[in-house]
Amino acid sequence: MADERQETRRIIAEVARAVDRRLAVEVRDLPGGERLQLVLTHGHHHGQIELPVTAVLAAAESTVARNELRLRLKRATDTMLFKPMPDHRIAVKPVAPPGGATTFRSPRGRR
Image (cartoon, rainbow, N blue to C red; front, side):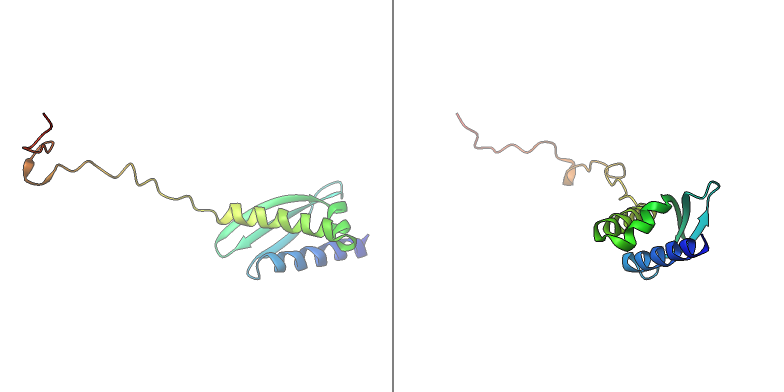
């Protein structure tokens, strides 16, 4: 059991390093022993995800499972670091034309 926990921590550390070298991961065991809670830290941003132990151990044997684990960590990291664009439409106010003129009409209109 201790070897299994150490192996899961090693795999998670390798995959987290592949996602971002500045990503710190703290692994916590959840009651029941079949799931892990990962606390992700990147600078002053924090996030959490839960993973089944079987999914982490499968990543050691299968490249497909390893990529799925990498994508789950990457998605959590991207969500944690996401900063929405400000809505500039709220701050923009209509500006009156120069000189106070209204709609421009050509003196030579169609007849």
